[in-house]
Length: 399
Ligand SMILES: *Cc1c(COP(=O)(O)O)cnc(C)c1O
Image (cartoon, rainbow, N blue to C red; front, side):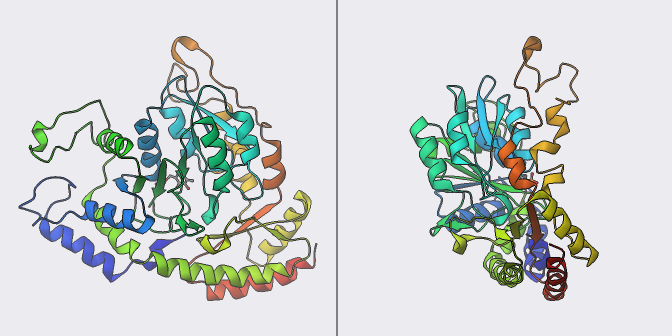
């Protein structure tokens, strides 16, 4: 995951360039900034890298989801489908848009199960958000087929898989929108930041205007005289982030190369453990390799193995118990906890009920997650790899 490991001279030069021009705002001040627009440059570079027609930089990956939902016209009364294994931001933004999140199972890709997706579509479904979890890809082709047959737009939450591809095509470019995060622990980082990509001109303009208070960005008039088609918000990226993004994007291939090599070394060690199976990747060559995810045959064996790994200082992440990424542990969703007195967004206007979220709603996901262990991959981990390899050898004996 961590682009922060490669922060260096390139980022420093980019930041200093912005400071020397003295303009932190992404728009206007053409004379003062000497015609240099870092955020716009980052957008162009990102569009080129992914092959998308349009890229819009925003203030976070959460903002990217919010902007994409708004651009599609999602609101109260609509249902938006996502998976029960994702970061909370995915459903937070659905709730915040006024729509109702509907959760589907994951399968052995650790991403959306297309079969369960089919079952959960209703006449109110207005968008589907598959999430490319833990650096790998969802089985996006059957998901797109199901969505296409129902005529429902797809937003690919690609926050965890920047740089990933499926059969040579960038993740994030299969759906109507792809969204990305550049927060401080993502594959490339701008501290906080995100990106929305699309090939659809009309939806791009919706997104671009919504993310900037409705400004229509008319190049023939000054910003103060611009008009608006609808109200918006402020989800803008600033120039320091755009500059960082340019430097980090240049390092993306280096990051992927390092992570893939490190992941391959660890995978090799785990392949020798009886009973271990790996997460299914529809196209292994397009994996960003930020995590190595594997299954033990049972919950009990996953626990035994991980305890032994931890005894050798190489404990794995057990997302089944992780409160930020797995449905079963989202007590604030399940118990409808909110800061508002009215109960919004869990309770609708005039006390109307919205969906219930029983903790046991995703039995197939539970059955997979309780057996799943995950090792995070970084750029520089030679010593770490040696330590993990030793631990794997010892832990294999307790199975
Ligand atoms: C990180 C993340 C987000 C949110 O991105 P931020 O930039 O932290 O707001 C959304 N979805 C997923 C799957 C993420 O991992």
